[in-house]
Every structure is written in C-alpha cells, then in structure tokens.
Amino acid sequence: MSNFFTEHFTTIITTIFGVGGFYDSFKQRKKNKLDALNSMQLAYDKYVDDANKKYDELRKEISDLKDSHRKEIESLKALHSKEINLLREKLQNVEELWKTKYESLKKAFDTYKKSHP
Image (tube, rainbow, N blue to C red; front, side, top):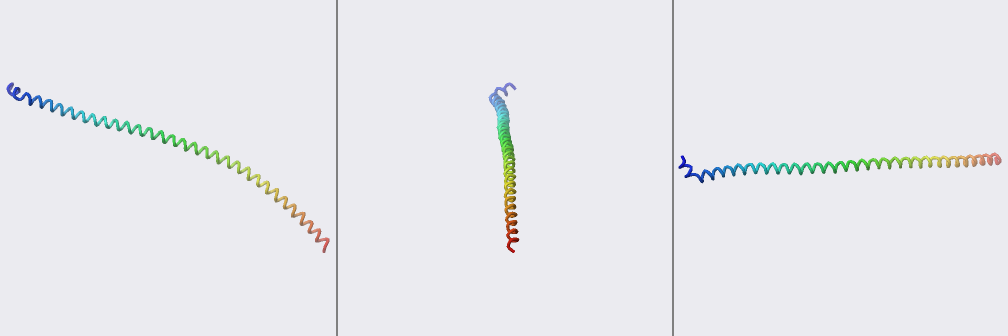
C-alpha cells in the first residue's frame, strides 16, 4: 500500500489540489454572482429612491401651482365681480337718464300736440 502511495503521490496530490481548486473556483463564482446581484440590488434601490424623490418634488410643485392658480382665479373673480357690479350701476344710471329724457320729450310733444290741434 505504501508502494502505491509513493508511486502515485504526485497524481494523488494533483487530484486533491485539483478538486480543491475546482471547489474553490465553484465557491468563488457563486460568491461573485451574489456580489453582482447585491450590487445590482443596491443600484436599483438607489434608482428607486431617487425616482421617488423626484416624483415627490414634482407632486409638490404641481400642488403649489394648483394652489397659486386657484388663488389667482379667486382674485380675478372678485375683481371681475366688482367691475360687473360697477358696469351694472352705470347701465342703470344711463337707463334712468334716457328714461327721463324720453319722458321729458314725450311731455313736450304732448304739450305741443295739445297746443297745435
């Protein structure tokens, strides 16, 4: 038996180191795959966080724009409401003016008509 070991010593040692190297290579590839997956997951998580921050900023900006737009519309409504009321008052004054002018003209015409049969 010792003769067998001495004759095949290099083959046995080579086989042991070869199997160990193969096993180590297998473990290293598995570790590399896990490292790659972890780094990809970290990159994806960072992307998701950045995208969520951007979406939150955009949502806030849209909300602020809606609020400012709503305030602007309300102020314009109030301004236009005042202008409309002012124009209605002016229109009523003009109607009264023309109504009095018409009535005075009609009275003058009726008086003229009575005096010149």
